[in-house]
Image 1 (cartoon, rainbow, N blue to C red):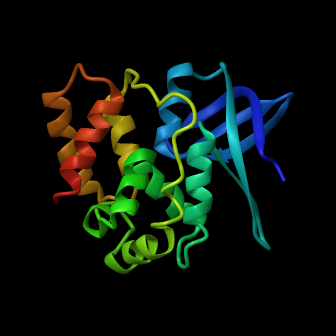
Image 2 (cartoon, rainbow, N blue to C red):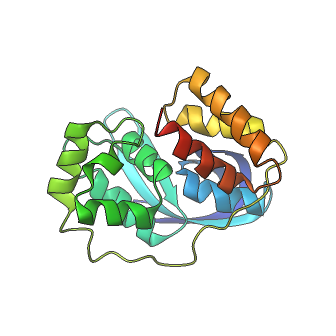
Length: 200
């Protein structure tokens, strides 16, 4: 199993990074929190990821995280009945690791259902199975820093579409947020979009 990778960023999108490790390109699925830090570094720069190797009969997929804390949360999420690795990736993209731990610990089903793809039954199952298991988790390493995005509109739209929101809602909200927060970092604009979309 692959548990850790260190190499150069060859290609990057909000949900996937290709990491060049000594001439071998590893495709690694990532949550938005990890994308922030990688995008700040930029293509061609060195990066390190904590890896979860997901093995299926027909595929081997790598999921990468900026901190061991995020990987631990991911692994606990995929242990919940009905949550696969792609949904777990979406959950970690839709809510920060600390906020997710807080929501699970508090049994805040309503807050969990604001994440795309998480309905009431899934949220209730997450709370039932993880409430006691996540309370001992604490962040490891620095929090992801915000960074500028020269193509904020297109990056925001792509990130939100990959989270499962409808294009019509996404384009409307992104346009509004970008007008109001044009000079703000990408992460701040994304948080504003997520906050608005959770109320749609």
